[in-house]
Length: 293
Image 1: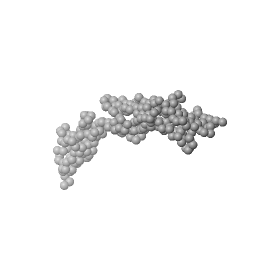
Image 2 (image 1 turned 90 degrees about the vertical axis):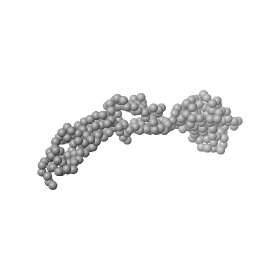
Image 3 (image 1 turned 60 degrees about the vertical axis):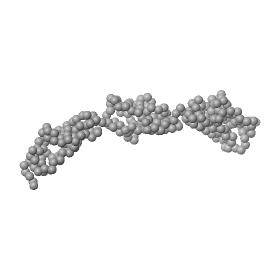
Image 4 (image 1 turned 90 degrees about the horizontal axis):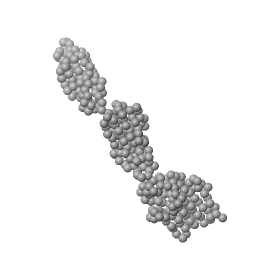
């Protein structure tokens, strides 16, 4: 009497659920679910895509199929199979029949998917160029790509487009809010990696302002401060009544003012990257003749 245990043949049987994943050049192990036994199996037959013999093992010896010499190891206690030096052509379905001395036959099948390349660890995964638009691209064959910005999942805004299966992030018009750290996580079933790109959006100067007193007594100490919204930081030049009085300083300081320090102060901000200039509103200062000495 022969008992054939193949009620799971339309699924995995004695083999793990597929697909199994591996890369070119690696090794894969097809482990059966059988408990190791000291009693030899009558026969074990491994096949590829239901037509190509990988190995047939009987008490008389082993017969290895073409292309598998030196690439396989059959473990006799469980009928598990190790396959080495994988190639893209090894992608497909693998099946096994295991014949025991008591007439029981175990069967199983699973699939194997070989990927052509692992994701290589690299600091230059992201290539970019800045023109009128900004393109941040990921140049590698991957399974999934996920983009993040400043530690959170990236939600494209009106000026962003994700294209080519999330490989390319395009900024049609770069805004100040686009400033930040962009991170792309890439993965396939056998490997993963990520890379970041820090985008610095240069802008300004904008909103140039002078802060300080509008009235001061003669011989008093004067301090005016100029600020501007700018990346990189702006360079400041001070004017009094149209005449330049100080450059390259955000502060105008005078220990003792004179009556001649009265007038209209303007601060001009300049951004060396954008090459833009912007001036503050006129700051009127009156110096009185009363000295609180």
